[in-house]
Length: 546
Image 1 (cartoon, rainbow, N blue to C red):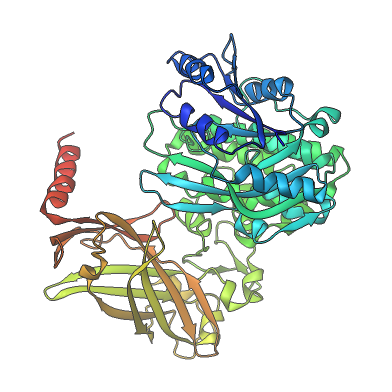
Image 2 (cartoon, one colour):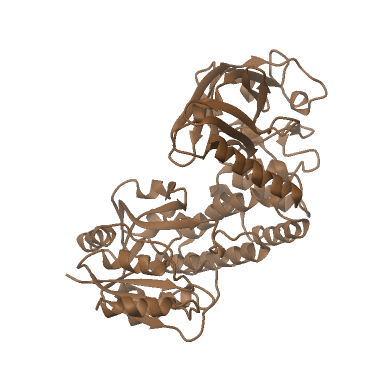
């Protein structure tokens, strides 16, 4: 039975729009119509769609006469034009995987729900690396009889991985914000949840979100270089919160603010030190103004890292401690020295911001502590040495007694472990000049840190698949039986992030480039063979010339 409409929207995306439309048509007989809304493109996209429609009666092309500047208006055009009982949305640069419509329709019709939602997969291009979006929400099939019973629903702000009953949207007047309104999904999703639908959740992949970081025109979600993007995100978050609150869904409204702290605030904070001084000042001011509208209940629901970053922003009238803020925002969170205390001994952010208290660190389980590990890759005549330094944290680590560390270099694309090693932690000699040592308490050895060292055979990262990126992941083990998974801060001292050439049985040589990620973590880029090495060195030479 043909009961589903797929609304495909696009603007100047001739390179991808036909693939999107074909992926919708290929869903089979359940799709009654595909409505392709062209937002006044100038690159021939609409003509491509018209030619495709000549051989496909299910395809209807809607040409907007004036560009809307956003995604909301063309999607609303699709809602208005459809004759199908169910509707879903697809962007022109993404695709629907085979079976997506059938899976969503079976869930919606079988459970009698107004909405069905499935797993969205973010596919990085050109690498092909896939990352599931909100996998915890879609771990298994479930029926949510009322959104307030599953507050986690507010974390999935996407509109594209869901099937909606058309009369439900029309009956409740649920539409997208019109015109240029970035992050329109946030408001639309809040309007859907506020209407109290029954929702069927399924674990099936139903949407492939293509992430093209090298594209000439970045998507709204990727183009975060200007402060207007942050302003737009705050505006959308605020409207979504107001929608939920006005509908009496206070639990969902609070959950949406907790998501802002744990997701948006942490994501942008990780990038602050990459921006100019003007951006940082304006970002800080915008964030302080928005956070001032939160109450204690909003902050209480958020995980600790987001709360701490928010407290630092609220406590300081200007950008400060950006490196530490960035690492607290990392996943997992890392709190680097110095470790200050107030006059009564309470852990605090710093001597300059004593009102930002960190007393929760005295109570959290060791497996959740924002431990700080510094990582150094030191070239040696006979290979490379990995040195890891674990900092004390208000006496909690000394109490647990660091024993050893399992270190792995994991391929960012497919999650494979290319190199694994284990090393023993040994206490460092106390250094009175080191603020990490000065802040440590409760350590019977009198030190404020522990060091583990192990030789690293970088040639083991030659996977035979060409260039790649490898992230360092750690599992810290303590003598009390507890453990903590984390990453390591990339130390950037003289010679520590220097590229090196190592022998390779497959390619002759490997060029290994250690670097710090946006979150400050140590990672490695690998280029195999003489040609790859020459390419990287050539790019470096050109950057130096310019």
